[in-house]
Length: 163
Ligand code: DQA
Image (cartoon, rainbow, N blue to C red; front, top):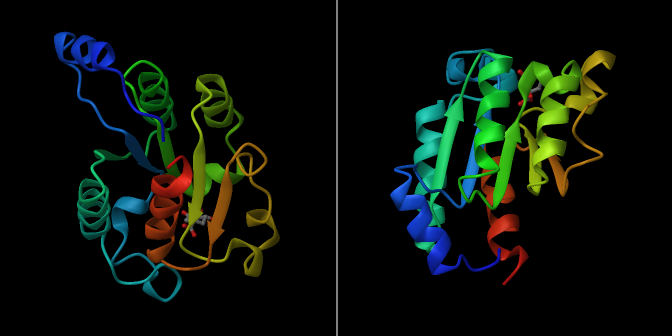
């Protein structure tokens, strides 16, 4: 990822906004991770995943913010905010919205921030309706089927990307 200029940092602080280099977005029902269909999605909960990602980003001198919502509108607003808050890359698991949401796709296309699409399960080994994604053709890459480790792989990819 590119270096952030001092002026951008100052502007950011003056605006009172929170700065994060990397934004992790989790779609509907991922708040239930840990108890939700553990045979499909594993037993690790979202707080644990988010904490591990933030720690790994910090160890590389980057900041990372995580956000989960069951609301498509809130996720769209968060993507819009990323356009002006210096977010440099996004990791997104759109969950069920992967297969349905033109609006969230349009939001992420509109802000033109590079992103990695992550799925805990291998969506291609599941029901046919999960085989189509409204995001994959825009993504830097897609990681599907490696459980919560997929988020770690996505983060490493982004951290190494522009060194
Ligand atoms: C998911 C796969 C989606 O099909 C599903 O609707 C989810 C989670 C995954 O992480 O494997 O909610 O994105």
